[in-house]
Image (cartoon, rainbow, N blue to C red; front, side, top):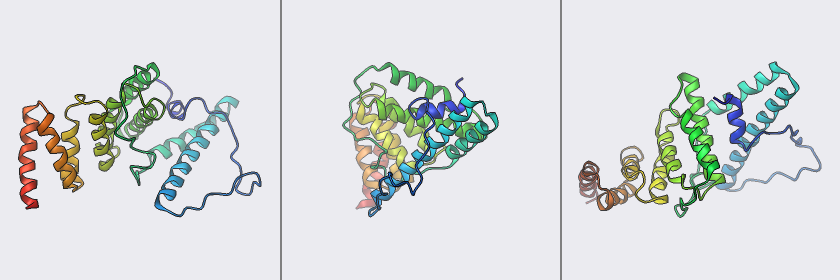
Length: 244
């Protein structure tokens, strides 16, 4: 299996070269954007996360190439620590969940390889190793959506992200529900339990009953699994009765 730190490097887009970060008083550096809205602030957080991750990856690569094993280990451990920290999505619409109109149409080998690599890590390990492996899965899957949005794997990627964000390594249920929806929207007929899984989250966990009702109706109209249809019918009747 690929060395753990190199998986994080790969998810950043390949082997990272050492590039010093300009200091805050560098006269050539453009002035920092002043955040004035929630979206601005969220974008700044995302950019800072990415820069910190890239800087650690650069430092690790520099020490690895120069043979400084001790400092390379420090950088690797700090990079692992960064990935172990929970990083919530403050706004799903800001550099997170892609729009519903994407089409899963192209067979792209690079996307297929990334998906296979992600599945090799999914669910593996215990304790911190398990958490790190799930972070690797997330990085690899999100790389597919970023680089290959027309890949015929994107519906499967969305489904796997839905499961990942619902699981114990993340527990980010709004994110999970949104990706389960995309799994169905990006390729109808694929992962047919995705709508009911999204509906359950909106219903029982997130308290978004309008969204749940919409998805239960989708299940009743299109799902061919009898058990899921009965579940949707029962819960839809209960929710509509409450609303009256």
